[in-house]
Image (tube, rainbow, N blue to C red; front, top):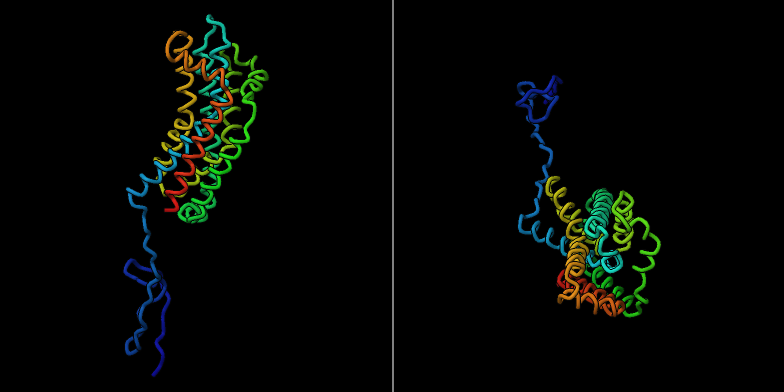
Length: 272
């Protein structure tokens, strides 16, 4: 029997295979093959919320910014009583927030370009191993420690920009934010989690704003506490700050061990 002849024509709405018509009468019908469709598997809302909270928890660990907190404490103690402490520290923290936000945006775009690689990494046990290894590294570095004078050295270099509120104060804060976050492992791990979460563009944009805000939560709280101490030096806040000022190494090591314990908890939770 003669093989069927297919006639080419323009595709219509009812065609399943565009460009081919039905075979001539008397010919055999060839079963139409529809291209396979791969159903998308969206991330459940509960999993997305858990992923977002996980990212914000890592951002909170990044907020243990000993360098910026030390600079704020030094400004609260060293600025004269008539100086505009609120405006100086406000510009410093705002600049730090801006630097963290810009760096987070750049890193998130880079992680998004890696696509499925980041998703596979976050959902694998390797991510938990990285968190545990980071916790051990932070604990070891904290144990070896330093003299706690890093904030004083930074203040000595940029002290001119922090004596009065100016654009230089804002730029100094931005540089401190970029430097501190660029050397912080929790900062990168939190953005990797956010990149693999499958969020919509609106949620991702709001998440970045929240991420930078949470990453500056402890420095902001420190600035408020120092403002209270300057106004009421004999209060219990003043006594606590004075005790921390007398033991800077112990205070820095305590913060380091707290970060190590929280990282270890997140890593073990991920592995379990």
